[in-house]
Image (cartoon, rainbow, N blue to C red; front, side, top):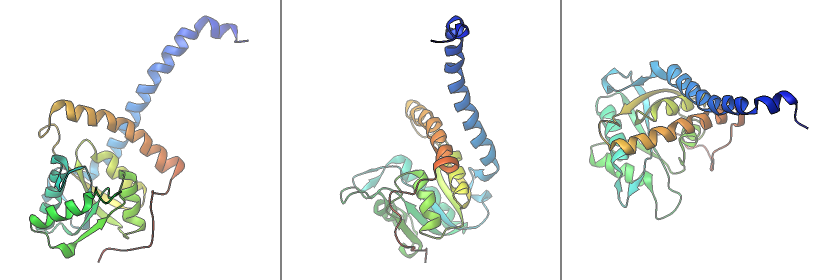
Length: 218
């Protein structure tokens, strides 16, 4: 039988519980944004030289990158041309023969002027966590610039740093470039994804879908 005090105050207790969930979510997201704030940039000229830029996949349409992915690749190419990075690591989803993000990413970067020899492909970067994990364990990346949209950047930088990559972040525009409802949807999803990221790096530390042998970046 439930205690008398609970029966008398159950509505209040349920209200407190319901309010605590969004409050905790907001607080943890603020924490990730705060601890990564000094490592996130919008101007490629402000980034100190790093060995490699990690470009995260963001969807393709046939043989073309999505607009968000094209922006990420373009920003990484700019870093390369400015001499801020020497190599690009394209990390995305190549889960089937009919869906190959990283080859599309490579082709787009080559078209923008990056030699193919300076591009490495990670075919199993299915999620941000897996891209950061594999960057360290499979490709030997110890320092990098991670390139993605601003709404995604705090989580990406946090994950890489927690998984052993000393990462800076270059954020590409989001609210300025895309439909408001699109960015709102991604931003909301990011709040939930950040909670999952904290759980992964501090509690469960799962291995990525695929590991495989060490490859390095030549």
